[in-house]
Image: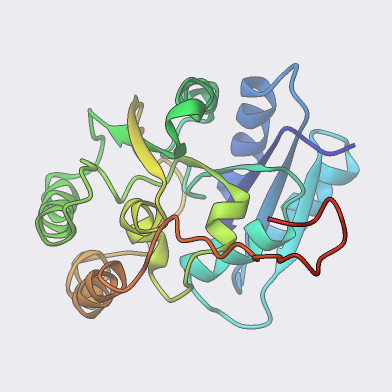
Length: 252
Protein backbone atom coordinates (compact mmCIF):
# COMPACT_ATOMS: atom_id res chain seq x y z
CA UNK A 1 0.00 0.00 0.00
CA UNK A 2 1.27 3.44 -0.89
CA UNK A 3 2.27 5.22 2.34
CA UNK A 4 1.00 8.66 3.30
CA UNK A 5 4.49 9.94 4.00
CA UNK A 6 8.08 8.90 3.39
CA UNK A 7 10.66 10.02 5.96
CA UNK A 8 14.08 10.47 4.34
CA UNK A 9 17.18 10.54 6.55
CA UNK A 10 20.71 10.78 5.08
CA UNK A 11 23.26 9.39 7.54
CA UNK A 12 27.01 9.11 7.88
CA UNK A 13 28.39 7.36 10.96
CA UNK A 14 25.25 7.83 13.08
CA UNK A 15 24.87 4.29 14.44
CA UNK A 16 24.02 5.48 17.96
CA UNK A 17 21.27 7.80 16.71
CA UNK A 18 19.43 5.39 14.42
CA UNK A 19 17.35 3.47 16.96
CA UNK A 20 16.20 6.52 19.00
CA UNK A 21 15.16 8.26 15.77
CA UNK A 22 13.26 5.25 14.47
CA UNK A 23 11.31 4.82 17.69
CA UNK A 24 10.48 8.54 17.88
CA UNK A 25 9.29 8.60 14.26
CA UNK A 26 7.12 5.53 14.89
CA UNK A 27 5.53 7.26 17.88
CA UNK A 28 5.02 10.55 16.00
CA UNK A 29 3.36 8.87 13.00
CA UNK A 30 1.30 6.28 14.87
CA UNK A 31 -2.02 5.83 13.08
CA UNK A 32 -0.59 6.91 9.71
CA UNK A 33 0.91 4.85 6.91
CA UNK A 34 4.57 5.71 6.45
CA UNK A 35 8.01 4.46 5.57
CA UNK A 36 11.45 5.47 6.81
CA UNK A 37 14.35 5.54 4.36
CA UNK A 38 17.90 5.75 5.70
CA UNK A 39 20.49 6.64 3.08
CA UNK A 40 23.89 5.42 4.25
CA UNK A 41 26.45 7.75 2.70
CA UNK A 42 29.58 5.68 3.19
CA UNK A 43 29.41 5.04 6.94
CA UNK A 44 32.34 3.19 8.48
CA UNK A 45 30.47 2.27 11.67
CA UNK A 46 27.42 0.06 12.29
CA UNK A 47 24.85 2.53 10.93
CA UNK A 48 23.57 0.25 8.18
CA UNK A 49 23.61 -2.87 10.33
CA UNK A 50 21.55 -1.08 12.98
CA UNK A 51 18.89 -0.13 10.41
CA UNK A 52 18.70 -3.73 9.15
CA UNK A 53 18.44 -5.11 12.68
CA UNK A 54 15.56 -2.77 13.52
CA UNK A 55 13.80 -3.71 10.29
CA UNK A 56 14.18 -7.41 11.05
CA UNK A 57 12.75 -6.81 14.53
CA UNK A 58 9.69 -5.11 13.00
CA UNK A 59 10.18 -1.87 14.91
CA UNK A 60 9.01 0.23 11.93
CA UNK A 61 8.66 0.04 8.11
CA UNK A 62 12.32 0.65 7.31
CA UNK A 63 14.29 0.77 4.09
CA UNK A 64 18.05 1.13 3.68
CA UNK A 65 19.85 2.63 0.70
CA UNK A 66 23.63 2.59 0.43
CA UNK A 67 25.59 4.98 -1.74
CA UNK A 68 28.38 3.46 -3.80
CA UNK A 69 30.64 6.28 -2.61
CA UNK A 70 30.54 9.19 -0.17
CA UNK A 71 28.49 11.90 -1.87
CA UNK A 72 27.12 14.29 0.77
CA UNK A 73 23.79 15.21 2.31
CA UNK A 74 22.11 16.59 -0.81
CA UNK A 75 22.88 13.41 -2.73
CA UNK A 76 21.40 11.46 0.16
CA UNK A 77 18.18 13.47 0.05
CA UNK A 78 17.95 13.06 -3.72
CA UNK A 79 18.48 9.30 -3.52
CA UNK A 80 15.88 8.97 -0.79
CA UNK A 81 13.26 11.02 -2.62
CA UNK A 82 13.87 9.11 -5.86
CA UNK A 83 13.21 5.78 -4.08
CA UNK A 84 10.37 7.00 -1.85
CA UNK A 85 6.85 5.66 -2.41
CA UNK A 86 4.80 8.48 -0.89
CA UNK A 87 3.75 11.79 -2.44
CA UNK A 88 4.80 13.67 0.72
CA UNK A 89 8.40 13.64 1.85
CA UNK A 90 9.67 14.59 5.31
CA UNK A 91 13.40 14.97 5.87
CA UNK A 92 15.30 14.81 9.14
CA UNK A 93 18.97 15.16 9.99
CA UNK A 94 20.49 11.95 11.27
CA UNK A 95 22.04 13.52 14.37
CA UNK A 96 18.88 13.44 16.49
CA UNK A 97 18.65 17.22 16.88
CA UNK A 98 15.37 17.44 14.93
CA UNK A 99 12.33 16.22 16.89
CA UNK A 100 10.18 13.78 14.85
CA UNK A 101 7.20 14.83 16.99
CA UNK A 102 7.10 18.00 14.85
CA UNK A 103 6.29 16.10 11.64
CA UNK A 104 2.49 16.13 12.21
CA UNK A 105 2.57 19.95 12.55
CA UNK A 106 4.35 20.19 9.19
CA UNK A 107 1.77 17.86 7.63
CA UNK A 108 -1.05 20.02 9.01
CA UNK A 109 0.54 23.19 7.60
CA UNK A 110 0.92 21.54 4.20
CA UNK A 111 -2.74 20.51 4.11
CA UNK A 112 -3.89 23.93 5.31
CA UNK A 113 -1.94 25.64 2.54
CA UNK A 114 -2.76 23.20 -0.23
CA UNK A 115 -5.24 25.46 -2.02
CA UNK A 116 -2.76 28.37 -1.83
CA UNK A 117 0.01 26.44 -3.55
CA UNK A 118 2.10 25.54 -0.50
CA UNK A 119 4.42 22.72 -1.52
CA UNK A 120 7.26 23.11 0.98
CA UNK A 121 6.96 23.48 4.75
CA UNK A 122 10.21 24.44 6.48
CA UNK A 123 11.02 23.93 10.11
CA UNK A 124 12.12 27.05 11.97
CA UNK A 125 14.31 26.36 15.00
CA UNK A 126 13.16 29.22 17.22
CA UNK A 127 15.23 28.06 20.20
CA UNK A 128 18.56 26.64 19.09
CA UNK A 129 20.35 24.13 21.32
CA UNK A 130 23.77 24.43 19.72
CA UNK A 131 27.00 25.96 20.97
CA UNK A 132 27.23 29.73 20.59
CA UNK A 133 29.79 29.25 17.81
CA UNK A 134 27.54 26.98 15.75
CA UNK A 135 24.54 29.20 16.41
CA UNK A 136 26.50 32.22 15.16
CA UNK A 137 27.61 30.32 12.07
CA UNK A 138 24.02 29.43 11.20
CA UNK A 139 22.80 32.98 11.78
CA UNK A 140 25.44 34.34 9.44
CA UNK A 141 24.73 31.71 6.79
CA UNK A 142 20.95 32.21 6.98
CA UNK A 143 21.37 35.97 6.88
CA UNK A 144 23.58 35.93 3.80
CA UNK A 145 21.34 33.46 1.96
CA UNK A 146 18.20 35.42 2.84
CA UNK A 147 19.75 38.69 1.70
CA UNK A 148 20.99 37.30 -1.60
CA UNK A 149 18.03 35.07 -2.49
CA UNK A 150 15.15 36.94 -0.82
CA UNK A 151 13.41 33.64 -0.14
CA UNK A 152 11.54 34.89 2.94
CA UNK A 153 12.65 31.87 4.99
CA UNK A 154 14.21 32.50 8.41
CA UNK A 155 15.93 29.12 8.79
CA UNK A 156 16.90 27.54 5.47
CA UNK A 157 19.41 25.27 7.20
CA UNK A 158 16.83 23.45 9.32
CA UNK A 159 16.93 19.73 8.57
CA UNK A 160 13.25 18.99 9.22
CA UNK A 161 11.17 19.78 6.14
CA UNK A 162 8.07 18.51 4.39
CA UNK A 163 7.59 18.80 0.64
CA UNK A 164 5.86 17.37 -2.39
CA UNK A 165 7.87 14.66 -4.09
CA UNK A 166 6.86 15.59 -7.64
CA UNK A 167 8.00 19.19 -7.25
CA UNK A 168 11.33 18.14 -5.74
CA UNK A 169 11.99 15.74 -8.60
CA UNK A 170 11.48 18.59 -11.09
CA UNK A 171 14.19 20.74 -9.45
CA UNK A 172 17.77 21.03 -10.73
CA UNK A 173 20.13 18.84 -8.71
CA UNK A 174 23.52 19.90 -7.42
CA UNK A 175 25.70 19.47 -4.36
CA UNK A 176 24.40 21.44 -1.34
CA UNK A 177 20.99 21.93 -2.98
CA UNK A 178 19.27 20.95 0.28
CA UNK A 179 20.39 24.32 1.70
CA UNK A 180 18.49 26.21 -1.01
CA UNK A 181 15.15 24.40 -1.21
CA UNK A 182 12.97 27.46 -0.40
CA UNK A 183 14.44 29.47 -3.28
CA UNK A 184 14.29 26.48 -5.63
CA UNK A 185 10.65 25.71 -4.78
CA UNK A 186 9.73 29.38 -5.24
CA UNK A 187 11.52 29.37 -8.59
CA UNK A 188 9.23 26.49 -9.53
CA UNK A 189 6.18 28.61 -8.67
CA UNK A 190 5.41 26.94 -5.33
CA UNK A 191 4.72 28.65 -2.02
CA UNK A 192 6.89 28.04 1.03
CA UNK A 193 5.86 28.43 4.67
CA UNK A 194 7.82 28.06 7.90
CA UNK A 195 6.59 26.38 11.07
CA UNK A 196 8.24 26.69 14.52
CA UNK A 197 9.88 23.43 15.55
CA UNK A 198 11.86 22.15 18.49
CA UNK A 199 15.61 21.76 18.43
CA UNK A 200 17.71 19.51 20.64
CA UNK A 201 21.38 19.28 21.55
CA UNK A 202 23.40 16.51 19.96
CA UNK A 203 23.84 13.74 22.54
CA UNK A 204 25.53 11.09 20.41
CA UNK A 205 28.11 11.17 17.64
CA UNK A 206 30.02 14.11 16.19
CA UNK A 207 29.00 16.98 13.95
CA UNK A 208 30.09 16.62 10.33
CA UNK A 209 29.85 20.33 9.46
CA UNK A 210 31.70 23.53 10.26
CA UNK A 211 31.82 27.15 9.20
CA UNK A 212 33.14 26.45 5.72
CA UNK A 213 30.37 23.92 5.05
CA UNK A 214 27.70 26.35 6.20
CA UNK A 215 28.70 29.45 4.31
CA UNK A 216 31.90 29.82 2.37
CA UNK A 217 31.73 26.54 0.46
CA UNK A 218 28.20 27.58 -0.59
CA UNK A 219 29.10 31.03 -1.93
CA UNK A 220 29.38 29.75 -5.50
CA UNK A 221 26.10 27.88 -5.03
CA UNK A 222 24.41 31.09 -3.87
CA UNK A 223 25.31 32.84 -7.11
CA UNK A 224 24.28 29.74 -9.05
CA UNK A 225 20.83 29.67 -7.43
CA UNK A 226 20.43 33.39 -8.12
CA UNK A 227 21.29 32.72 -11.76
CA UNK A 228 18.78 29.85 -11.92
CA UNK A 229 16.06 32.04 -10.43
CA UNK A 230 16.39 34.54 -13.26
CA UNK A 231 16.17 31.94 -16.00
CA UNK A 232 12.92 30.09 -15.48
CA UNK A 233 9.29 30.60 -16.45
CA UNK A 234 7.08 29.17 -13.67
CA UNK A 235 3.59 28.30 -14.82
CA UNK A 236 4.47 28.28 -18.52
CA UNK A 237 2.26 25.87 -20.49
CA UNK A 238 2.28 24.60 -24.04
CA UNK A 239 -1.18 23.54 -25.22
CA UNK A 240 -1.56 21.67 -28.47
CA UNK A 241 -3.85 23.39 -30.96
CA UNK A 242 -6.02 21.09 -33.03
CA UNK A 243 -7.69 22.38 -36.16
CA UNK A 244 -10.69 21.42 -38.27
CA UNK A 245 -8.87 18.34 -39.56
CA UNK A 246 -8.77 16.82 -36.07
CA UNK A 247 -11.29 14.09 -35.15
CA UNK A 248 -14.55 15.31 -33.63
CA UNK A 249 -14.20 15.94 -29.92
CA UNK A 250 -10.49 16.84 -30.23
CA UNK A 251 -10.87 20.19 -31.99
CA UNK A 252 -9.94 23.41 -30.16
